[in-house]
Image (cartoon, rainbow, N blue to C red):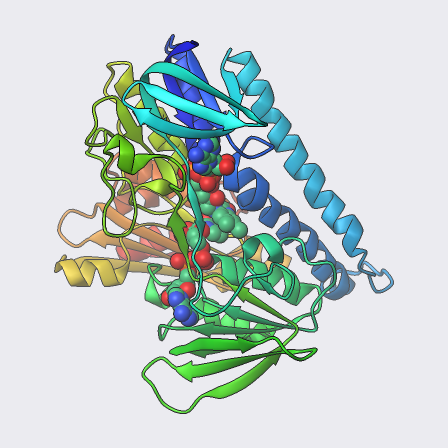
Amino acid sequence: MASYDLVVIGTGPGGYVCAIRAAQLGMKVAVVEKNATLGGTCLNVGCMPSKALLHASEMFEEAAHSFAKMGVSVSAPKLDLPAMMTFKQQGIDGNVKGVEFLMKKNKIDVLKGTGKILGAGKVEVSGGGKTEIVETRNIVIATGSDIARLKGIDIDEKRIVSSTGALSLEKVPSSLLIVGAGVIGLELGSVWHRLGAKVTVVEFLDRILPGMDGEVAKQFQRLLEKQGFTFKLGAKVTSVDTSGKTLVAKVEPAAGGAAESIEADVVLVCIGRVPYTEGLGLKEAGVAVDNRGRVEIDSHFSTNVKGIYAIGDVVAGPMLAHKAEDEGVACAEIIAGQAGHVNYDVIPGVVYTTPEVSSVGKTEEDLKQAGVAYTVGKFPFTANGRSKVNQTTDGFVKVLADAKTDRVLGVHIVGREAGEMIHEACVLMEFGGSAEDLARTCHAHPTRSEAIKEAALAVGKRAIHM
Ligand code: FAD
Ligand code: NAI
């Protein structure tokens, strides 16, 4: 029987990163993966394919609508959707092969099959008609998450799709109805809208992007509406009639009232994700889960069973790849006897649309609710020189600082490249920096990042270019 220091179940960004860090620390490690390829949701049907399609569709949109005004004259671009899907697949393959390489480089055994925990120290791996049992000192559960479903609406991944189907549609739907104005709805809605679909988004709450700063979400919604999105907020889809050539969705006000019918070629259901623990043997192994099915862990990623840990989407917290990765590193370090740690106050979130939305730390709503006195510094991209010359002036930067200490508590950005720009705020916040620190840091000119410096100056009411 093979024997390891650590067996990680699942090779998403949580699992494979945890395995690499453990190998670096001298452990003998194996990963178990039931999918044909490594990399989990993120690399196969999540972050990476969606970003490939977002990039390609943005180029299509730019070629059609932005080149001419810069004096670049091209004939109207034609969409070759199969080629765009090949571009996406090449990106997936490249990344997945990269993880395989990293497993080999770090001498990590890859056990192909479904992992089942038989108790502390024992994992059964079954797949391809074979079953083997491996012994291990430690187990990390990194089995990720699955799509949340809507009662009575069956996802066939052709006409009624989850994110997985929406990443592989065979043709551009003339109309796309999206249930849920969260990250997936707005990113994949952007892809298909740019390629020609009429997009309607039905959202249960009275706002989009719950959890993000309210002012940012409002401005972002206006920008998406300007692009052509239609939003139906405070509404829910209760059924979808699939009998005709076109789907007919019944949409009701969330608070109750008269229903309306909306026709669509494709319906995308993206109302969140749920932890994935099917077939893992948690009950038999005595591993506790909470009332939402998430594996319960303490501050050291340990479950209630000694030697069994859990990280990533399968535990509480934001379902983000970088959160899973950081937990993977910290968990491996803790298993090795070191002081692994994740700072949950500084986990950035990015929506990779045009413009992008990025956020780190507390929102204004969080601070109001916690009764924290804060000051706000804002700076619009309309006043940023680089944005002006590029004619990409949508959005603004908002810095929230503690009114007494000036410590930066949150930074929120709507604007081009907001996802790249947020990290200077992350570093500042990791070091407990103040708005004054940010304002006195020299920023290269002309960059969009100067808007962050100006927003920090605006906290002290002394922005220069506004
Ligand atoms: P996963 O990536 O879900 O990996 C879990 C792995 O475990 C899977 O490979 C699965 O096959 C395997 N597994 C499960 N059970 C077993 C078993 N019993 N035996 C063996 N193997 C098993 N996050 C971001 O930060 N940025 C983004 O841009 C982003 N975009 C996204 C876009 C989409 C469309 C979706 C759906 C998600 C996106 N996410 C994004 C979220 C991100 O994908 C997840 O947060 C991340 O993948 C979680 O990593 P994980 O390691 O916890 O689990
Ligand atoms: P989400 O939680 O971001 O959004 C779901 C939305 O659906 C919410 O606005 C919610 O109020 C709404 N909703 C729930 N039930 C509804 C109903 N019955 N009718 C109408 N609306 C309803 O979840 P989403 O978009 O499915 O994404 C899942 C996860 O994947 C998220 O946790 C996200 O963090 C992650 N992800 C991250 C990305 C990124 O970092 N760029 C990209 C895509 C996904």
